[in-house]
Amino acid sequence: MTLPRLFFLTYILSLCFASQLQGQAVETADVIITGGKVLVCNQQMQVAEAIAITGNRIVAVSSNAVIGRLAGRKTQRIDATGKVLTPGLIDSHLHLLGLGETLQLLDLSLASSWEEIVEKVAAEAKTKPKGTWIEGHGFHQDKWQTKPQETVEGYPVHDLLSQAVPDHPVLLTHASGHAIMVNQQAMKLASVTDQTPNPDGGEILKKTSGEPTGLFRENADELIYAVYRRATARLSEGERLNLLRERVKLASEECLKHGVTMVHDAGTSVRDILVLKKLAEQQELPIRASVMIRDARRTTTDWLQNHAPWSSEDLFLQVRSVKLSIDGALGSHGAWLLEPYYDLNNSSGLNTLSMDELNEVARVCYEKNWQLCVHAIGDKANREVLDVFERTFQGNRSDLRWRIEHAQHLHPMDIPRFAKLGVIPAMQANHCTSDATFVPQRLGDRRSAEGAYVWRSLIDAGSIIANGTDAPVERVDPRASLYAAVTRQLANGNQFYPEQCMTRAESLLSYTLWSAKACFSEENVGSLEPGKLADFVIWDTNLLDCDPKQILSARVLTTYVDGKPVFEK
Image (spheres, helix red, strand yellow):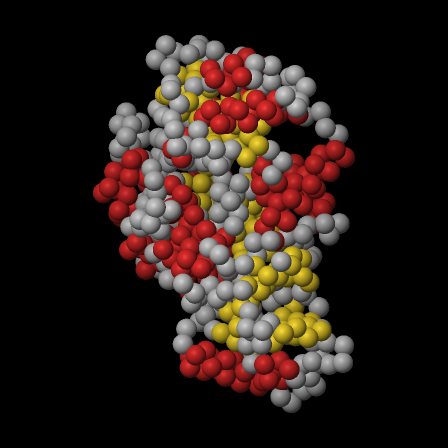
């Protein structure tokens, strides 16, 4: 932004807020921050110089002169010395408890080979009693520098892992979150053999001999998780509370140090939501969370029928959404496609949820005023969800703000339907640059160009994008998604169909105001305007006009929540 434009907008803001102060007693603010650059992140993307806070609310955003009038004897004065303020960032799709849990587990995301992973798991097993579950997360076979000697559809087989760790059940989660890899001991406990059939919406990947490889896709992972849950269900309620409290603490700290002050939790069980409500009532939530219910069908529908959307008094927790998944992930060949995979022409992916169930939950959500959020990655999955939404709305959608989570691959004919139906695509920009190395392999060039991560096409058609990271699938650092949104640049310097880039302003809105709107919170967060909660971040870099590469190195200096500093560099 040019300096004349900055001064003009600052002057306009000064007039607006100064006019509110004229003719009335001016109360002093608790805190004023001057001498900086305030990116308001309202729809006009205005810029100011200073901000004033009283209690946990913003009382004014204007010029240094106007804000200076709100300083009294007890006012805390902070000189931003040219630093940049933005609203607290809002990650519109992550898994808060999952993030906290993975911070306690083996991180396999940086492993360069299957052999390296086996070595890490074996080393961990030596520190645990026999029979203890060994857990890891984040492996992705397409990102390894060397490939395993034996593979099935690109995935390793369990033999090396089972030989190295014979006495501990092992459970490793794929980076996509839509597949797991286990060893022979885990399969033995789950009674999985070459005779075990595939469950609906899932697949036990097998060798040509029929022997399970150890890779379980989509709903098939429940065969393993059922055994795992029984082994870990012996915790008392007090122990569970402490466990979840620790996971919330770890995940929140990771978010806050990256300037994320609110998250949309993309799927938590009713049982865990009740624990989160208890923490909220005790004012123990360090970060704001809008939580989507994700549970068994009967549990979910019973909750929707008997409970209204809810928010804590301090606005740190709200429960007004439901999460379903209709397909899997592109990386694991689980996304549901209109045409077969380019590199697996006997498969079009997996439909993981019956259409009857989706229609029934949609009906209940519509009747009871719950927001419905559906995971859909493939173009077939997105079309089916849009069709269900359209039939449910029957032209009476009002302001439901139903969402499709990910919306990664769309048929061109379905792109304008999002805006037409008022459906919000909640998309994680870092998935684009992270997955781009294999997307053309899965879809081919034509389908990748016309439908993969089409942010520009969706925005031009009238949609808003709610951005995020899908942590712990990806790292919670928002800089990767902000950078990907405006460059679509890969580590090797190539750009993935750059015609679909967002502008700088759009990328920042996708992490602030647009994400706030995606969870009905724009009256309280998402922009730095009088009356809103004082959740904001002080950066050393202007995310709107720095060199694009500097987005990745921009540092969060201080993160404020409720008017208080909760992280300082």
